[in-house]
Length: 369
Image 1: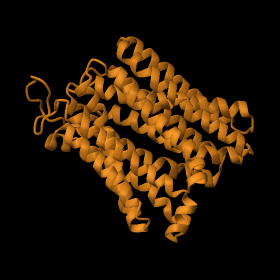
Image 2 (image 1 turned 180 degrees about the vertical axis):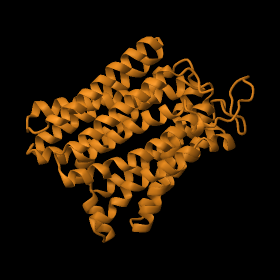
Image 3 (image 1 turned 45 degrees about the vertical axis):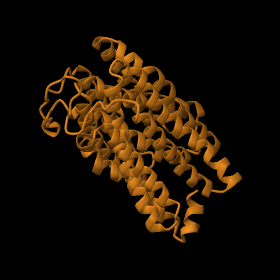
Image 4 (image 1 turned 90 degrees about the horizontal axis):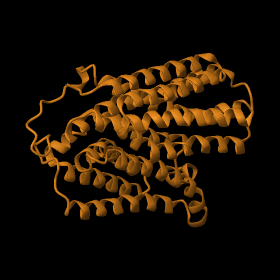
């Protein structure tokens, strides 16, 4: 689709790289402050405004000029940055006794929606034209916005403007998360899985190509990597909310060992074996999926109020996306110097270890006080 868009805008395809970078920049800039609109407007209106930002951005991208594409992508990035922070808070506010179920629903929706859209983009573009994809990307947030507008009229406001508490709870002190040592493991866990995820997605196909894996087999391997997140998103949240801390620790150790085994296998990548690359994709996808779902669930389980959930989620995502922004670029530099070098494999191993140890600290944390 980028080729068609570049022709329409009369620019070189490489210039469109900014459209994939801008959302990540917005995540870094706005996630840390995403809890503030909840304080100002309440959760229902704040969520509506985030959806409207995505609708506005998607509408601007229908104009098909480079300035409107950039501005539209900025608005979309701002909206998504806020929604990423709001969703754990929404679960905490409206479904405090069903955290596992509703974390499963929204995490599954994210993973399945992304996977489904990747599958249908090419067929729809070939059948109806690539502009149809841009239109669909406008219609989906419009439907979401209208749905939330209807739903919000019949549900109570759980976080009223100016009140970062729910129910009959008394005032809570403002969390100073950036100076709180208990909050940093949340950031490192989220940042670790995001960095590994972005890097693997960006560079694993190129790495397989270097080792003479066919394009067809590489596509299957990447599909395995993407699909493994679905069962994890369905099963894991309910397990985490029903197990004792002792068993969650054991589960975390198991996932950490999977991540470390996957890291170790990278040192033996000099093969075009389909079994090797499929196994590697399975293990990497399983470990990244575990730590992503775990940290999203822990945002809710380890905080006392929905507003506190939003604060912690915003802080961890802001720092985590900042970490992940460097992953693909640094791997690219190492890949250019030596595609099969050990430096990038050692860095992957260290990052996987940090992610595991940080998640271990998250699981052990009772509260952020």
